[in-house]
Image (cartoon, rainbow, N blue to C red; front, side, top):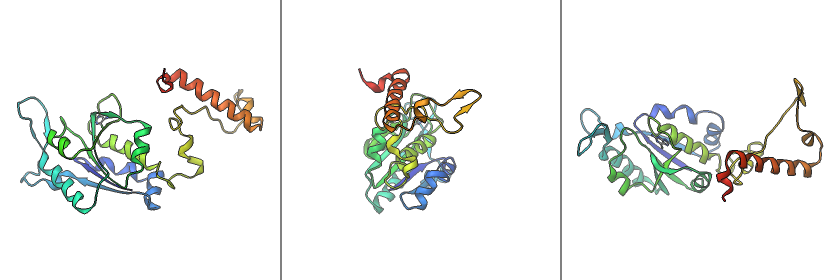
Length: 225
Ligand code: 6GU
């Protein structure tokens, strides 16, 4: 997969993809990530990327020209499956969205800033608008990093058995059950006997019960009505 990210603060996107699973996914050739500084596409002498909003009101709006120029250039080089706009008024990201996006070959992600982007960008270029939750971030960069992380780990071959995406919380619509590792006892706090029983059927049943219990308690919305 190829991911092109358009940003006015590209330095915010350096470290999230430079370590751990993301770095390995790049090294193994599963994903290529390109960060584009929208300012590089500004044609005015001050390299402005925003302007006052028509109709008045506080807050600047991201200008159409540099963003359109960057998107047009990229679209001239290859086809894109999705052009995503990161914005607090987008659809709140779910695992099912990540699963869909992980099947894409090429995507563009535009990071919103200020009061947002000129509406004509949304009307004429954007195919999907994503929010990562009901709170406001200073810009779309951290949200874009969240989307990229959640999507890239689903690309076949990125994770090994130990980190398999199949047993993630949400992937089966449930939260994950509790997990334990050595020692068996710490300050008298014991690991549940069933996990030490060596009976795989009993262990599976326990995990399923605990996953359901945890989901019921913390995220009943995931269980439907
Ligand atoms: Cl995508 N952008 C911003 N600025 N804030 C957010 C968000 C996105 N998602 C949740 N809050």
